[in-house]
Length: 184
Image 1 (spheres, helix red, strand yellow):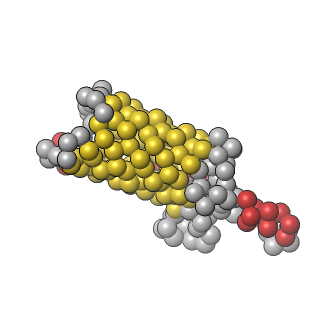
Image 2 (image 1 turned 60 degrees about the vertical axis):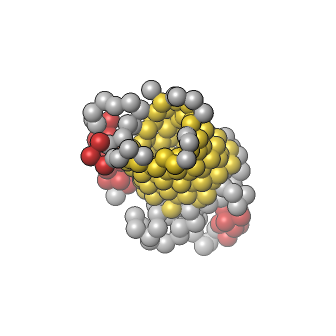
């Protein structure tokens, strides 16, 4: 099952990279990892957002595919994946967007067995348990274009399997951060 999920993720990434060449955007973000403070550190986020899909876009709105990769400065969960990003422009140079995708990760998926109570409790106190290897990636953001090619946005990010990819433990993860984008 683990290999099937990885294969599906890689197929999704390949499909996105096969899209017609369009103006894209490179982004770099920094987020407070786990706003509940069970896990620590910051998340460094790298994104590539493709140009708008013409068949799903208007003058002030559109849908853009994206790739995301995140690493944690304190060695907790790293993740990467792909999805779609609906967006809308409003007022002068302001925009809102919502990323909806799927990511794979290297975080903990299970707790130690009950016959290891000390280790089990340590993990419950200091780490998150995600339940499975594939998670939904939800990330609303609001931002502003600061020049023709540059933008800045604040975002909230949530990871969870939502009882869809698997069942059982599903603590999820919430991060809050800021990212800078450069559009080609």
